[in-house]
Length: 94
Image (cartoon, rainbow, N blue to C red; front, top):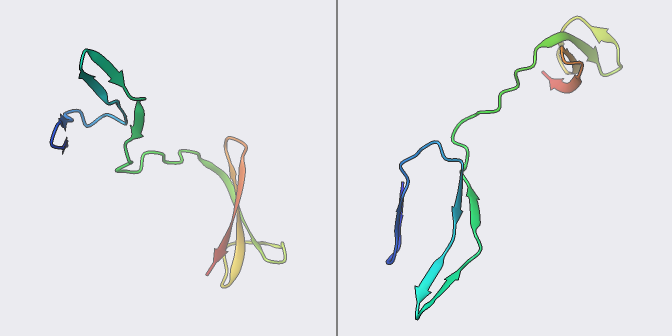
């Protein structure tokens, strides 16, 4: 990747970077002035944060709160208990 203006060209050869600091430096007339560093985070290009938890049990409930064997036509609630002890619920509409 390269960025070019009339006064500077920047080339990036390392694709593994995830954050870049940019600072403007002026040198002239016997003095030097520096801007604050502006940090830019690279936009993700792939899914990197995959949920690696394992489900311990999955239960389904109808909208009245009664346990059902599997999702049915309409709306139901899916309750997942994970091996790390957390519990998540989600609404399922078929």
